Image (cartoon, rainbow, N blue to C red; front, side, top):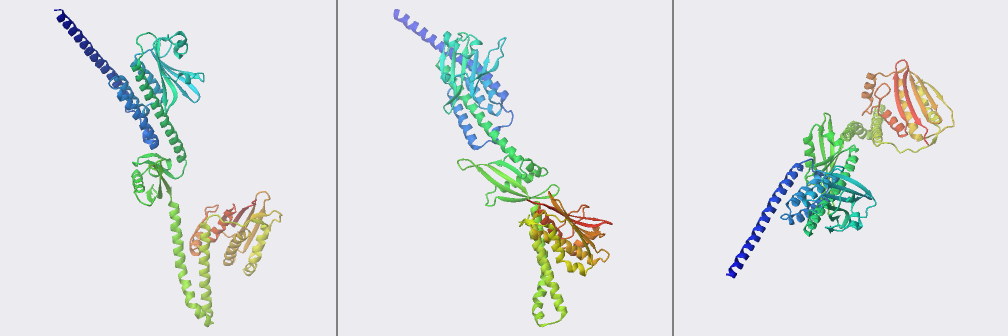
Length: 574
């Protein structure tokens, strides 16, 4: 009978233990369900906000971010069944860099830490830029806000506070070491270091005022998981900030480039483009996609030409370059767009010049070839005269082509030396003296005799003055009423010399200028005078080119009842 009573008592005790375990399991499930609901609702409030910054960062940074977040997620999964609230929070934490900054993540972490540990105060102390800052979150009191920061300066010793600590009963001297001793009466606390890449940069502390619950090894495990998650996410934010700063610097650079610049990722998504590129495709964005697709085709030619109408016709040259990482993998593409409309126009003009010159030279060269043998055995003056005309025409065409090539080549290489400008003028007048006398041209000169010499290419300046004076002699010889020509030279010691060749009373109107250029110029190189008159011919364009190469200027001004003034302004030089 006694044995039966023992068996019954054991059965009751075992049943009671099983029932208690069952009730506890149900309670944990119920608490976990409420925790999950709370965390899930919070998570939903903060998702789907703003633009994902990961779209604009490099592969290296993306790899680092992926490694950090993967480590956080794997660790959190191990504790999923033990603490639903912590698991949901860390899942939520992984999304935060796309929504918040560093301080907002710290604040939310501290808020959730109070819930997870059901404690009264939590704080994070971080070291950055030589300063320690404490971020404190506590249950609301009358005289303190729930969240605030304290600048600790350089007084906090992180090295001595960089270990995991569990204290369930604090001695008086231990309380004095806590930062929150003035905020509440500490009873127990849990401390976990924050570290990435084995470098500690802060700590998390959870403090209770009353003995509501003691911390245990499981709490330490949860704390280390949260610490690792927060440390990794702070690192992620730093990586994103570095990438953003690099992107901002790159943007500030390309915004000041005149050429259009477009930067895309591997999937042809545009990451950055400067205002010049946006302006080029403002009326036709489809052309931009066409250009990018053409440049990204696997061909050996990295250049593509594209024609736009905005509304004027623009010719663009697109060039693509690759940006690779340390693994030699392509991260981004840089596309540069240059407006080559003027270049194409010049190329077309050069082709037209060469074609026109070749066409014009064909007949005189053919005549010279046919009549050179006949000329050796014939004394007829007509053959000699025609041959001379064709030789001069061919020479003139070649000379014009050489002049055109020199102008298109850009600024000249000058042989500068100290020269007396009045000597050059007198030399030109002496060389043309016979023409002046034979055409009965009245030439007057007013030249300032001065010891000041100009640093110029004497041959080029002589060529310029000779070209202008020869033209004046030609015009004066064809117009008997306009035989008066004057040359004036002003020398300013400190600055420049001014030479004016004046054809008195002879006036060009617009129609005469146009007719003159159409009759006597093979290809027109026009300049603008003070009255917006087109310049006369290629020879004057070459004169202007010579003077501009010296840093000076050449102007033509034609006024009724006064005449035409050809003005050369030549700097003194050094």
